[in-house]
Picture 1 (cartoon, one colour):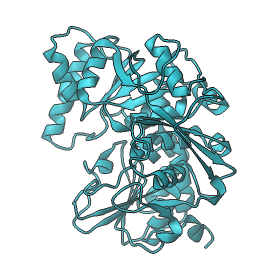
Picture 2 (picture 1 turned 90 degrees about the horizontal axis):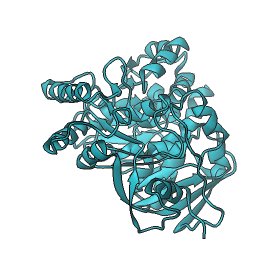
Picture 3 (picture 1 turned 45 degrees about the vertical axis):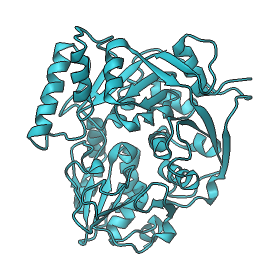
Picture 4 (picture 1 turned 30 degrees about the vertical axis):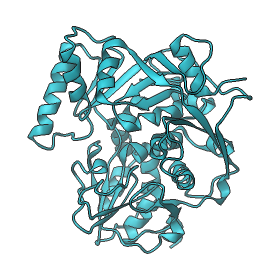
Length: 422
């Protein structure tokens, strides 16, 4: 019997010919990632061990993105701790203000994660990198400390689920809509500790950016990892980015899956996830007319250049409603710079948006977009739990950049087609 792509990557990094779901394996790590919230705890544990070096200064990545630029004294002190650690241990890939970006936008852009990698990050959305054909998963800060020290981590090999998207996508439908639709069908625990493997003609037609969005939200279904087998688009994406050689894996034709779900992509409308769970997804037609106080376009889910182009295409020549606040956050400095070169930032500012330096900020209710009591936001972020973006009696709706941009213009949740045809 064959193996899935996830099983092959774990087997290769465990030094074994094959692995099976449920087995415990110790794997060599290609990369370990920490951010400004999770790294301080890992550093404290690392120092308790009395270690004098990390396993490889070039394989540890520290990104200051959640409360950056510093929002208060506590966040400034956290960053100082990380900055001193990075200098002391010669961390090559340390990204601070002016160089940083939202971590899960930054690492693919910088070519730090490549196909076939096995990596961990002390952030739940580390599963993003599965879009490049890597095994990537989130861990706690103590596991990050061990990973920084040893370059290894243990895993229980997950069962795999296959999600096949047949046919062609409708206009305005992208990766965000496909993953919201999927989570809406299987629920937030529907893939608990499983690998979600995405395939089919519609996935092949998606850009790498769209696949990154899908794998980013695999964790919202409880998954251990999300993954897409590399194809020509993946290799083209890596051609001028990859910083080291890599190995391409693919699932065997007879690989076993615990479940297989097949969908007709042409039947999927743009999606909106209602409060307070990503599984509460519905077609945008069922959300039409819901007024919002704030629209956020950005995050590690939809802060890439493709997302900004989509939003700007709808906002160009139009103004955001005076009844709401529109916040646009490019995912990295490079995305910010390219958006400026293409005139996208000008479109946003002329539409009445506030354009931010890269930051996770409002996504986690950190800063730069906190909601007050009773307020409602529509965001291209990945979570809409109670109190996620501010007051526990506020509400967050999730959608892709097209729906977000159209809704910013009208002041209520709107199908993009209603705006562009006017």
